[in-house]
Length: 77
Image (cartoon, one colour):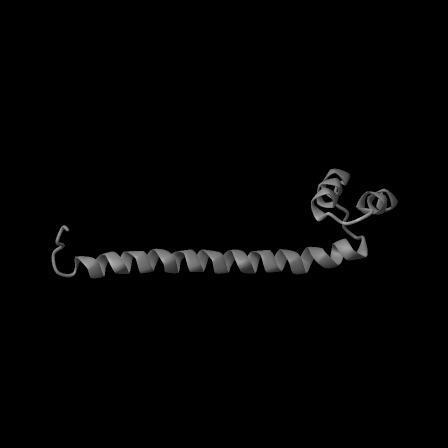
């Protein structure tokens, strides 16, 4: 096993910790962004003020696995 000079392991540990902390900060920022988008768009989608394109609805219906989803989609369009 290769020996590292004294303190090298501490520096390597610090580098790994700094990288993890950077990832945590990036994830936190992304979480806040997604929360803001959700809080802004969801009420508009529910009220009908904002309507996604039909292709997007078809994709969501296909992914949802909801019984009679195609029928609901036809009624919505």
